[in-house]
Image (cartoon, rainbow, N blue to C red; front, side, top):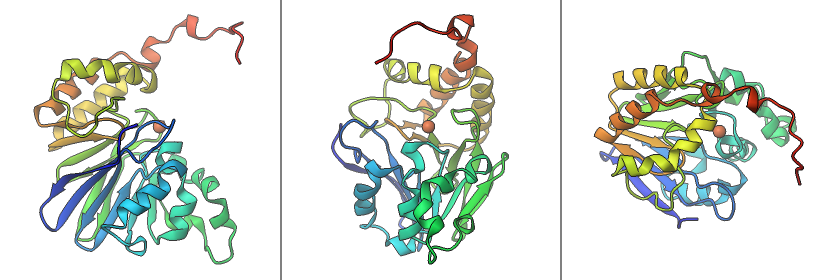
Length: 266
Ligand code: FE
């Protein structure tokens, strides 16, 4: 796994977006965590689970105190996204924004908090996002939760920051590569690093195309996935074109994929 790195994705003095990479040591999949600072307000995107909790809190502490964290934005419900929820709700006052489809499931990740007398009601800390998404206030700005359902989770959101014009795209655009420090430069050579993942994890071309058409209408300077390098400028358009025509998920499934196999496991 790569070494720990911080990348300043945007900085105008008042508003900053920072990517933390290489926090996962060992066998877990490489992932990027994100901090948005807007004046005295702060939001973390997809903070992850046990593998990233301690290194991420140490990295964040250079920018924001735990008690100053306003928001945790979760694209979906997976282990690499939000499984350290219990720690976050105990150590910070942040509200947790997640699809309404998952908002009644994720308290399972925070049982100690849910059961503690001092902890209060976990549901008071969760901001359920309806399917159409919307604008989540952050100081005098906001973060737009944009629908990305079935890409890959059934209730899936991405987070667009109108100040930096960054779309934090979750698993869309994700890849597994050694060096995640710079943006994608050679799109054609990058495709093999993301093709298999998108073919199996994304639910189908219809969702990909609807999503890409929506993103073209947003003013996106950087498309920043949770795994692997980001796409900047014209590479954003190249990714949208590529994924618009991608056959994936149910498009590729046939009878052959739904048969009881006699293969011995383990
Ligand atoms: Fe996931």
